[in-house]
Amino acid sequence: MLWARDYVAIPQNALIVTDKKIQQAPDQIKRMIKGTIEALQFIKREKEESIDIAAKWLRIDRQKAKAVLDSVFPLYSGRWNHD
Image (cartoon, rainbow, N blue to C red):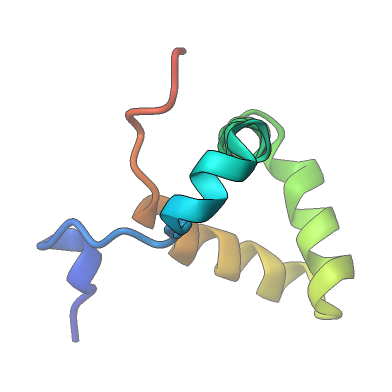
């Protein structure tokens, strides 16, 4: 068994918008991108609190929430990080 993420860069999420949405609501799109980046920075910076939030949101115990974050978070690019 192996993790594909260890061998191939696979994006976890994407923001897909239409040309019409870009023309009608560019600020909304910018806010969505900014919010996503801030959330990823928070998860990296505040790992323990992020585990608690994930456990509550997913309605699972803390150990499972930690496993979820540990398996999913590496799929995100670190290019957004300015640390």
